[in-house]
Length: 141
Image (cartoon, rainbow, N blue to C red):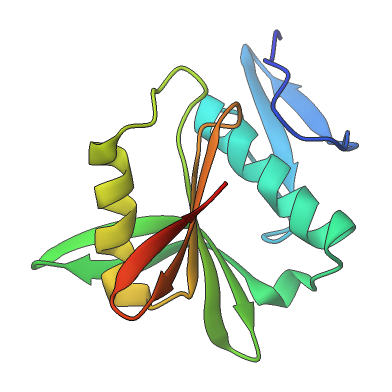
């Protein structure tokens, strides 16, 4: 199992298991093993970051929440909440996916339903961070 090194200062202690020819990673929020896809590898880094580095409780993190956008059911990757209010929406892409205006717009559309004050679009190697203020996004370097 060859996993790319992602762009995080910290290193995290992930739990893995193998079943037949598939690898799984333990999700601290859902308390179960999930199929280790490139996108899940990125999401688990963010989950560990908010739990370990930022000291959020697992109950403040919501993964794969269903939303309805233009009559279609979608799933958001990770939502960080504070006092039950949406704070940060994180959209995770596989490290091989290039971040673009199109992928940012997808995240912004999801946020039009969720209403988080901040969004992060990430492929684990690059992160685009923006605050939503006065009806527009202000990018954070």
